[in-house]
Structures are given as structure tokens and as C-alpha cells.
Length: 243
Image (cartoon, rainbow, N blue to C red):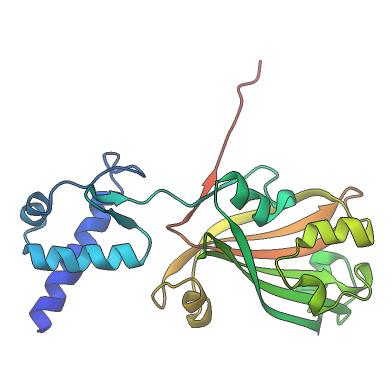
């Protein structure tokens, strides 16, 4: 039994190494199982176990009567000015149905670091909102927003429920308009809870954006942590040549 798990792990790792090669772009059909099994030096049964695991993780997808394919990203997020549009809008333009599930809503106190980022006093009141974002019922990212409470007086949990757009609410109720963001994207190991929400194994890595969102007057309005499923979300870059 131990040898079987070792073989499955070897097949899994071997498939991952194949899938990062240029021949296996999103949407590419995998070769026949017999060919892959011979290439990876495992049995076809072991290979199927590894394919099943990658299918559960969202890397591969089986299409009836067609075969197994490298799964395209469900959501392609433009890097430049992507935050101001919000995840719901980005999901829609990718052709998927956006859904949002509120996981927590609480008032807390600003740490020293958070106070410096948001340009508020230490221990000043913050609103912390954590949401699970979905595309066609599939979890694609977690978003945690930290807002200075003085900028959003009276904001309550019910205001965010039901998939309400946070940025639309900021505009309509508080007359706060998105001006720009600055941050960074990096790979980070998921917590056990976050991995469970994204249906990923424990200690899996995710693409995490941490950034400061400012209004049109360049005043910080939000510190955002966006934890993106590494197989279902892709960040898209586009640069135009200049004269």
C-alpha cells in the first residue's frame, strides 16, 4: 500500500512538471493515458489516481467523449486598475456568474502597521469584512477588506449580505470613489481555514494580492487582502508600446 501511494505521488508530481511546459497551455488536450503512463513510468490505474487529484484541484477537467484537458482559468484578472471594478464585474466579463458569500463582519482596532497604511490613529476603529467570491458556484478567491470606520459610519453586516458590491455601496452611500491602488502579488501558504474555503489541500499555496486602495483624493480607503485560487484565477498583464 505504501508503494502505491508513492507511485501516485510520483505520477502527480510528474504530471505537474509536464503541465508547466509550453506544450500544455490552458485548453490543451492531454495525450492518451497509455502514452502518459509510459512516459511517467507508472501504471494506468496510478495515472488515473493522479489525474483525479488534479481534477479535484481544478488543474484538469474531463470532457465527456472528448478526453482530459488542461483547465483554463475561470477568472482572468487584469492587473492594471483591476481592483476598482470589483471581483463581481471581473467575473462577469469572464462569462461566469458572480456570487459572494459573507464569511465575517466585525469591528476591530487598527494595529500600528494598519494605522500607518490607512493614515489613521493606532487603535482607531476598523471594519473588517471577509468574503468568499465564487464563479458559477466554484470558489475562486477570498477577500478581506479593512476600512476606517470613520469613513463608513453606520455600516452594518446586513449592508454587505446578498452579494452587494462594496465599491458600489461606497459610491452610492458614502460618495467615496476609487482612485487607484498599489500593492503586490506573491505566493503564500494558505491557512487551514482558507484552504478549506477554496477546496484546496492544507499547506497549498495561493496567489495573494495585498494592496492599499485610495480614493480620487489619494486618501486611503481600504487595505485589501485578496487570496486567489492558483489554478482558477490568472492575472493578466497588458502593455502597449510607446513612441
